[in-house]
Image 1 (cartoon, rainbow, N blue to C red):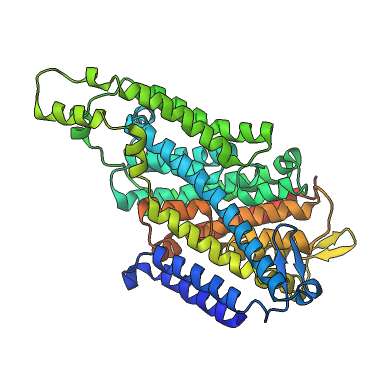
Image 2: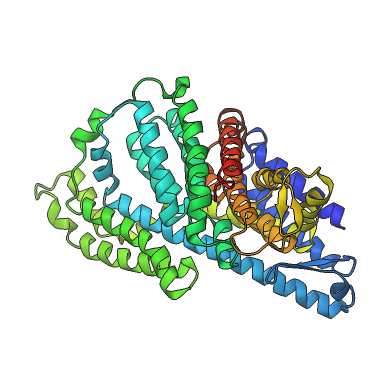
Length: 470
């Protein structure tokens, strides 16, 4: 039964990567393999020899086989509910962030930032967005930073063929920036909450490797033909578009509300999505207040354009923003995460990580009396691009017994956080960018993956040098 589940996952994964060739939206195979994998888990619950308890990050063998059918079914239902809860935390957070971004766009808030970008040079814009992605992801996490920056990018770079190149480098920079902050990436947050790393040591160990992981691919990309010359400007848009007097207010309010989320989490210790819902409520309140005064912004000449503007003004900006959310991306996210959760629950990913630890020639240092291979951790990073970094980090929590702030945990945080950049569906930032810009899997593989690999390897080598001085 395990082989059948793995086969379904592989076929579903292939269907996602061949989306454009099959002319089949990626959410269909994602949802299909999720449902089929869990159906086979339910049908074969008595035949499995082990079960991975995600809540405790431990593998059950004898305790699982000793259970009767009802006990195993109950454990499976609890595990399914656990994974659905964790996945929905991400999805609700994502929905809140995307809605705030759409509300900002409703008031044309991103035109404020567009006004600050005076240069038309593609190379300068590349560096600007890479640096913004790096630091913004450390503050509001790589997922939200990617949403915000691609939304701004869509206002500045009008040509999609140019924009997807910038989006690819934003993914690399956002994942690199998320690695050195305890709230920058979900895997780093897992290690932080699990008392494996602390904030000061994360910065000391990972800031320089993360900078290298971002800066080297950006430096190399700046010499590529895609970033030569200047972006095309749309002069007609600037002439015809009316300025909204609330655009700057809604931009600063919206971004401030997103930045407030990690502060809320630190103070209350509640999951980030709770703070995001509070932020959305505040932003939506001001959006409703401002939208009621929009009728006074139009002229009273009764032109057809003004009548259309008035009609749009009386719609709720929140409803309008929710209608523009990319629901296919949300459902794809649900499918891929829950499908991976099925593999995790059977201990397949844990076994994969354990086999890496045991079978690969060790070339690391002596840590707490146990030899740990640097190559193993780097392969976990590569594996996080193919599968998902969350279950691999969860597996590593059960694999290693090193104490808090051991260099191993910081290396795992870096590898899992930045390794996902090597494939478009290897990180939350990549999945969101893929949905927002309809980036093809193989285009990313050919054009961006090698840059992400260079940054990952260079950052890993920098970490190995850095740890000798810490």
